[in-house]
Length: 200
Image (cartoon, rainbow, N blue to C red; front, side):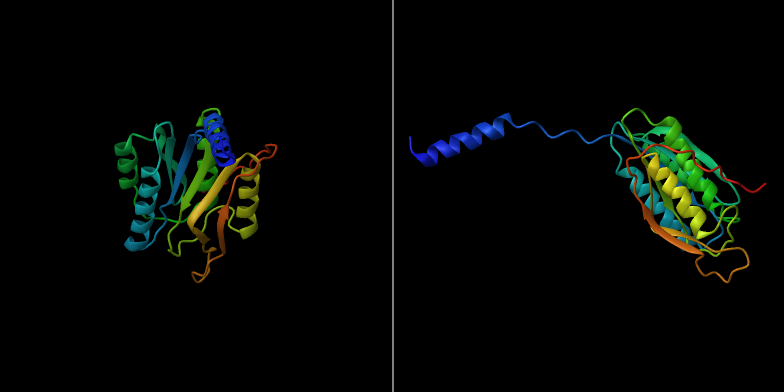
């Protein structure tokens, strides 16, 4: 046996006994949609992007849909991600109107994954915001939103926003009061999340 053949056999043996790749963990995705007053094109973009995010989920994943305008509400409670019809119907039921309770929307999405994720599931909140100039309700400063996202990171809840987290403060001329693009989950000890102060 030549050295070349020996090396080849050793490599084959190593590859044959290598541990298989760990399966990708399932996830609970909370889809949070901005339903504040905005133009149809902007709202349609958010709905399409949310539908695409749900379509990428696999068997074993779960999904929730939350909408926020004047207040935040659960449109679709935790559902098996393979039930595409339920997700589609939930998204189609949303309409743009009212103001922008962004803080409450993120908080409600976090509560959905916190309460209803199975052991070992990744917890994700994805926020789809529009480009309307609706005034914010509740905590609206950039620091308030950043503080909330930081709290969620410590609970291993990731918060992301494909279009950024944009909002206009009451009485503004429509310029963004903040633009936080992304917050990824990090391993840490959990801390209590500030309660959302939603509008009456």
